[in-house]
Length: 459
Image (cartoon, rainbow, N blue to C red; front, side, top):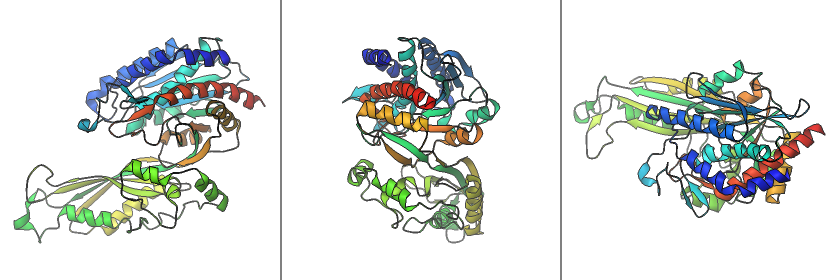
């Protein structure tokens, strides 16, 4: 292990230049015009995996953007296998004018790499490629067996991987999944995510007249679909943030007193969090603390509202059609399919008969809670302490990583979520960034995790 650690420290500049090249590829999975770029990113990653010593590298076409598979399976049958997951696709970078430097021309400022995908998830994913290389270029072997499965559709729902996993259980068989796609508490305080909220994503379409109408000639006689949509949305939550859909909270697993104490014992600077958000004050269910609302309570939010005239100047119309995008974050033991049905039924119930309403559930993922007493958790805790000289905190993350539930349900695999991003990395926003020391510390932590996991698994 010491040789691998030394190699990683001596090759920081090389590892940085490779990451900058990776970030320069605009692998935006949601836009058809970037399909060649997504493919280029998959090919680039596969080549670097080969150069790092990984074997059996495959670029897999499973109906959408390609998956990348690689492995190194020579540690021995008695040693555990770690399945490493990540994604190389990125969110769109618009609005471009809010970036201080071009999103696909990576720049380093004050120890941060600024680029789309820097933190989510190219920088964090590439850490593990460098961990493998550090071992194989020095001692020539790993203390554990390793497999990689990397997708190019995480930001658009991950359909290719969703169908690939159940059809390739033997290929993906392992003892644990390792994912770095989350955040640390602060630059020197590591965090292990032990729970993720699930998600239901819905489209709501409200249609009134067959075409846009003059608001003077028809206003007052035709229900404006924008007004109707506003009333529908207003009926989803009360002014304190409680969701009004009947049955929505029925299956929410209540927190025990011990769990609530653990959640609220995490060091959390609400003032700094609020300053980073730019909002004037926090908001939400008053009977829960802010940190509870951010990680262990379900949510419902309007993510987009499209309709009517939105260009410069005036145009007095009643729009024919209005579209809303709405997401719901779920907690254990909420069932995404049930929540989708409850949402759809309630929207149709409160919609006025003067408009037509269509509800489409376009994406779901289940909430996940990880076991806290396992060889993998012990090993990753040890590795964090060795690198950062402090115990990691255990967090319930408010976001969703849909594939984690599938690893758990389909492959029966525990997942360790060890992230090296920071809460203020601006993922999905202009000026996304990744703290450069965490890139290097991540590689060192990964090297130590492999060695510790082999030992803890055997013991």
